[in-house]
Image 1: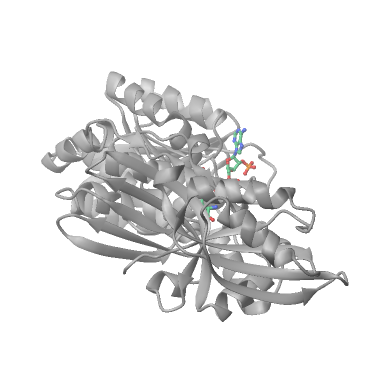
Image 2: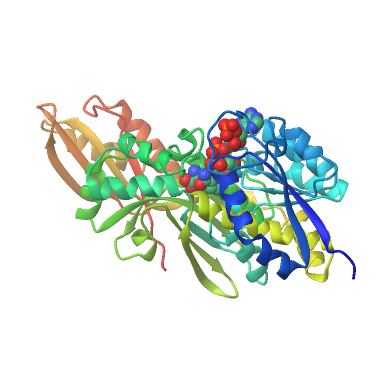
Length: 443
Ligand code: NAP
Ligand code: HSE
């Protein structure tokens, strides 16, 4: 009887996710081996600091501080890049792909910045790049878009893509606490990025939106070209104002394509969603993504968006695909074509100009509490054609100041940006207004 093929796995980065992969792969290895008909060997791992205490135990000979040595080790077939960032991680990924290996990555920052280069390198050298864990944690969203929904075009994809922010927003709403206190908890739970500003300022969501836009529309959008706003200026008071209007607040990514004009908009911003909307009810570390397909209609995906176990689950699903690729079976052939080709090589789409991105808005500002203020604000808005739908005014510290919350009728991003800069120039407006979008999505 012939010996089963031995597939050797190297893990670069043994932090939250890397240790989760090592732990769960060790636990289910025998079962996977019998299903795949191969032997799986956790061959080597790299870390930055050998002295750090880790929950997984490795034989000393398996651990190195040189991730490139793992990436280029001729005995290793599959390299998991779980370091994060866009420098060492890029070097490691390119080096492994240049050796024709399969690379499995959870690194959305890297893909959004260097995706085109990574796919091209994989293609050129016969390697493969798999990235299920890069978006929406344990939800198999990449597979859903690529495989389950392959018959569809996607006019609208929107949802919660950052577990840390959703955890923070949920705790803020339920505990009335400001975000810095809750961010510490999200870090301890292993949800936050090493640089947590990527989470709270919206950039991590933007990186994931770039990956989804590529899968859905075959084009790389640069985060700098997008509207990207985070949750750092939201206060517990905004949740009370939103509730008074019948809304909750979620940080959403929105990827909208008008197939008639060819315009695509990809944006990230905190959004007021009607309290009854299913996405508004998704709390804690959970993500929720609504995908509108032109054939299947709307499908909705909810699950843990961050954390060790959920992310390890997604990485291991890619490892199994990687084994299929290496065994070169029929399914692998399909996956191989999909893993390195642009998901949808459609005709190039144009980014929608701000004036074409329409919506309703919530504005919260601190103003001087004196006669004529509301008239000045209304005039500034009317000057840009922005029409007020509702006003909530309440007294606020310091004495003589008031908090003003306005909602608008339909307007657009050009008009609202111009309105904000006019408002910021008014003497009666005491601090930069906070702008939130109102999400008018049907479910
Ligand atoms: P992490 O806990 O910070 O782990 C990073 C690992 O990489 C650590 O083992 C670290 O070594 C090593 N490392 C960091 N910088 C290095 C360098 N310059 N050279 C060599 N090794 C280095 O991060 P993580 O949370 O596991 O995230 C890893 C990746 O998964 C990131 O791309 C992240 O965006 C992505 N991701 C994370 C989650 C999540 O919930 N955490 C979910 C989905 C995707 P030491 O341990 O010695 O410091
Ligand atoms: N920091 C990310 C989040 C990890 O909180 O969603 C998962 O990608």
